[in-house]
Image (tube, rainbow, N blue to C red; front, side, top):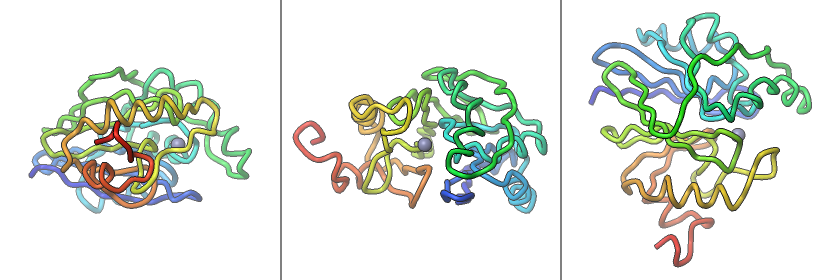
Amino acid sequence: MTIQIKQLPLGPLQTNCYLVACTATSEAAVIDPGWDGRAIKERADRLGWNITKIMLTHSHFDHVGGLEEIKALTNAPIYVHPEAVTMLEYAPKAAAMWGFHIDPPPLADIMLTEGDVIEIGELRAQTLFTPGHAPGHVCFYLSEEAVLFDGDVLFQGSIGRTDLPGGDYALLMSTIREKLMVLPDNTVVLSGHGPATTIGDERLNNPFLQGDQWG
Ligand SMILES: [Zn+2]
């Protein structure tokens, strides 16, 4: 295996930031720098990993609170879906409504679309367009390693909330059915909050995914 993953729960909502590294090249990507960019950089440094990409599943403020700092420390390109850009610009205001301060995010560098493959050293992360929780939400799927970084789409025993601006319950459910539940049962799901799970476990146990259509 050439993949190593570190989960860093960060910030007031304990959002999971992930460091994903190719052990053959020591190249690493940051997925969702939720808070405290310096802590993310220091963790990568201790592991001997060189951060070359910053990837956003979506731009809710708790997923991008450390974006300005990690960009300044690494100058790595920021990958985001174009429909998430407006909310990214709005993130400091959204944070302020919850009583938090985040730095104004830098401009994104690379616009993602369904099917785009992002190389992290020898790893290949495929972009899945997964709307419903937030505008421009994407997941990153590494089929060789059977790993899915799914942001706030599906959680262990739950699903992403759809009551925030741009949320759409019916759209989220069709995303889960058509983009996630078609993946192999052994796919490890690494979510934006809480513990890891698998597609198979959620197919069996997730109360939101029961009934004939999920069989
Ligand atoms: Zn979210």
